[in-house]
Length: 290
Image (tube, rainbow, N blue to C red; front, side):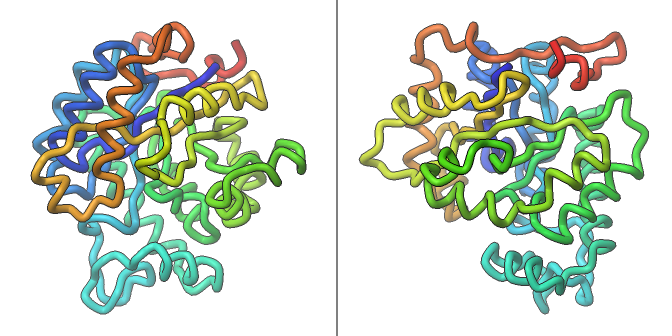
């Protein structure tokens, strides 16, 4: 199975609208939402339109927007109770200067915000800038998940390819190699938790305007190293004033990805689409094993 997931739902109205249009055309398998965005509350209801054809998850975030739990003593926030930039967050995680209980509180609050706005727990959880896989943060994430009663365990996105051959990893883009290294130990943590997760991952990009996204997409879809569950991330959307004012670093690329996803031949037939139980949940263990 190939899961094609659009990140950053809720970042701006234009990004959310583009994702909804792609899901309506069966050209995405999933999307993950930023509940820390100022636009989340106004855009959450539209997700109900796509649940029959796409999984809807939480894009757990520790670097963008406003924290839901803001205390001056919190280790992943600065002195003004704002999120740390990604570079400082990574250093704090690697040097174990983060408190997993603080991460747990924020993650639990984001899960609750998702549930309150959509009426359901997230189908899966991933992380903005892959923060969920970092040391310490991963333990706070898993502890927060255990606070809730899930119809079926949520899928957790694994952004690394640690289970592929060394030669394959050496040929990976530099960004992917860095994430593989930062995610070291995430595989064993997920196995201990018995939570379902993808077995291979693709979608890293330099986001260069000189690169044809269609070529990147085809390479990502073909990079299936495990037939059970291959996950490809993407970042489509429509550019609007809110996105321009947000400082988003990949503004023009989002339109390119949207156009390519709409135009790619046979894409709806090539990617996975969910089947939900009578309770509206996705049985990921069953889906992955089929």
